Image 1: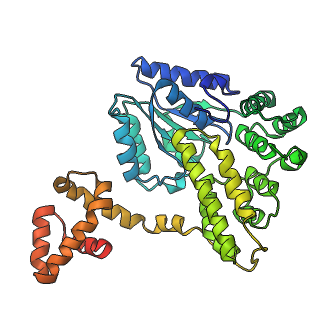
Image 2 (image 1 turned 180 degrees about the vertical axis):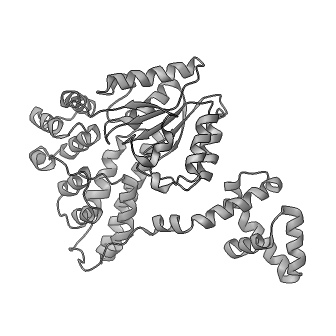
Length: 404
């Protein structure tokens, strides 16, 4: 595996004491010692998540993770994490249960999530690690006293320089010493952004001083979209995403929603969506293979690729729209929960997971109920559903309305 030019835990730059504590945690687990879950915390971009994934790879652990793209409700935590925390894989490997960015997305917890996480901690037989930017955030105060904190600090510019030179050697790319030193000194200890800057100047050394700059890490999302849609150079859109804290998956959703609002010509939209599809593909590959060098290509496709797709300047009168896919997750939360409650009743008959029943079996059941009601007595059919599946009348109605 190659994470940001790093192939092993020993090659991660900076935070030596924190790395030692991670290694000790893993060694104790391997030796059968029960360990309190870790809370790895510190600023963005300094290697927290990369270190945890490399730790799992070196120990041969399977990673079961909730990250920025996942909704953290009680049901998801129970289904995906608690079962993984108490069992092993089919091949006998330990599961490492990882809940990333727990403080950033705490607002997406439902009311029962903190209780489910507390249950996870108390019942876990496998290693559990949480990752946060700020361990003192009030939204995760329920974790205090239940976790062992491990702090990651911003990385020294000298250490970042060594990593950048290593990446240049690995890709056989020549970048001047002045550029490497400039990137390192202005990275503010952020390894991820330093690597993004390095990728941005590879092959365009003359633009190095334009690409590199002290960052405002809280660029407004509308401002960021403007910098992409109205750019007419390769480097400017890359600079814009390098200076933003917006999550990659979230930016892709914003672009997907707003390309039709900014690009009028059908050909421009087609090229822009093709670039966005490529970005999504590289993002997926990076996560599945844990090979984050793919982010280099993802960044180019979702910034410069989208920006240079246009044949004319965008319509400035159109307002940006909030991504429907995110809004629908919020508005459909109650429906999804009730579907899962119905599916749990059906598990006795279908002998499958609740999520599988919702995905594959509910539509078949709805059609069967609909066909019976067409020719039979609805009340009798409701009684039959109660006897066979323990379904109430309103649940039968919900199945037919949503899946029929």
